[in-house]
Amino acid sequence: METIRLTTAQALLKFLDNQYIEIDGEERKFIKGVFGIFGHGNVTGMGEALETHTGNLTYIQGKNEQGMVHSAAAYAKHKNRFEIYACTTSIGPGALNMVPAAGTATVNRIPVLLLPGDNFANRQPDPVLQQIEDPTDYTIAASDAFKPVSRYWDRVQRPEQLMTAALNAMRVLTDPVDTGAVTLALPQDVQSEAYDYPVEFFKKRIHYIERRSPAPSAIKRAVELISKKKKPVIIAGGGVHYALATDRLKEFAEAFQIPVGETQAGKSALAWDHPLNMGSIGSTGSLASNTLAKEADLIIGVGTRLTDFSTSSKAAFQNPGVEFLGINVSSLDALKLDALSFVSDAKLGLETLTEELKKLEYKTSYDESYLQSLKENWNAEVDKYFADKREEGLSQTQVLGEINKTIDEKDIIIAAAGSLPGDLHRLWRSSHPKTYHMEYGFSCMGYEVAGALGIKMAEENQEVYTIVGDGSYLMLHSELVTSLQENKKINILLFDNHGFQCIHNLQRGQGSDGFGNEFRYRSKEDNRLTGDYMPIDFAANARSMGAKGYTVHTIEELKEALAQSKKETVSTLIDIKVLSGTCTTGYESWWRLGVAEVSTSEKVQKAYKNMEKKVSEARKY
Image (cartoon, rainbow, N blue to C red; front, side):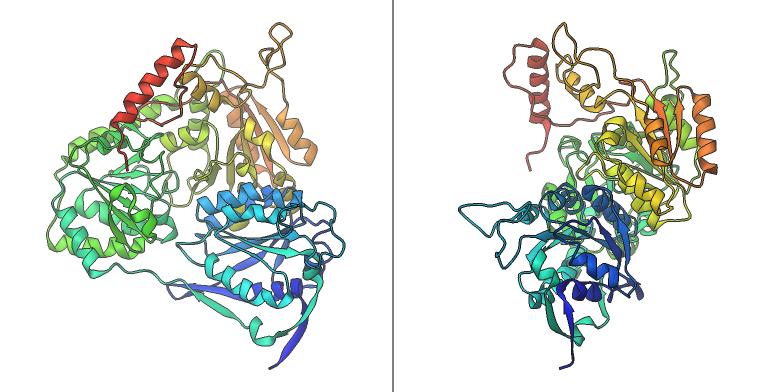
């Protein structure tokens, strides 16, 4: 057997550089490069390997370990999981910084390959800098923290172990059902140890992503269920995008006059102005979608995990005869809400059901004028929000309307946390698929700026706008520097409302007077954070890094800043001063919270009773 002597790190890169996927006959290089931040636990192993690597993997220097994984995840998500990046770090805090982003990727079923450094496998210099010592189990290291947030976890303790570890990593990374964060912990001594690897290990490998066809018996059951229903509603999830099924969704809905509600991940699957697109659904849903969901006798979930936000904590569906059909490549998701399971690729599943239902000449009983009226009324409601002018300052919804109107239809927006995802889900008008990128599986604060970089790397010829609150921006904006370093222009639209106002609103909505969520100085009177707002110049912060910065107090200033940012060739930040509490709420929506059962506050007591009433109306499984 022909062999080649390489270090573990060198062998890993050589292997990764030769991995490809094929779907629908199209072949793609799967791993594009490596994000990294070097420390003593990886600089002489993975660092040396990257420095001397002669293949086609690009190295991107991250500025924060969590941030670079978010960038990698956003890239993979925008590429429909067909291309990914790996991420390398040192041991200890460098590795642990990736854990929140690993959870974000896994919850959203996005493939990222994480390569944290680890303790010395030979234990000779123990305990080393940043090593965690457990007196009851000396095998435990910081990298064990990745186990609950990874879809596959392994520790490569000998160079030859790399071969099975790498193949298993690829198995999970390319699996549409089981994908997520994959962690290969690399002890810092093993990274640099050499082994005579078989040359065959480095051959070009093509991983075939096979579309799963529905079983004939499943088709029969699904057709029987749909055919007896008069008022079905489709919930379109992220799987519609990943399966490249947006056209099939449109054809299915049109063929049988079935209205569509979109989840955060599914939004933009159908153009906002399509007659059957009733907008967002669930806790941040439109009145049109939520009204239809309440009346529906069948909910058809397509590529959705049916989270509490999509189902209004299982309270959205009030028809006593409502049933559920789960079209999903994952059997876990296909069964949710006690649904009739239809395990299938979304594209093939919709194609098959369309064909079979057409044979039966199936149609829903919806009055076209009723659907039109619901949609027109909601559009008028959105227009009101977009025209919400306040004498005291800018409302959040007015600013979103101006941005929506100004940027190009094919420009991409991204958001993740705070009150902005709710408003964007309800109000934003997307005309083309993949122009709306929302991380709402984890709603991870700090994803926004880093994610924008990942999207820009995936779509270099389109403008990318990250819409982020001041709270999220302060948590993590380090990859703004990376965007400048890599000449990948992103646009940061920062909504400055003096704090964590989304949770402040949520808190007050459950009986609180508001506590600990605004960016205020500590008051000498009550020793609480109730003093004046802290003035923060975010535009100056961006300029200090080399970006262009603008500050906006009026719609006219916003228009000018948006126009100017389009002309810039480097990343921009527009600091938009908005009024707190000017977001959307209501519309037959609900979200279950753990309200205090016992409290000295009468308002909290009332909120608890209201919560219990809604809980009694929700489905139990």
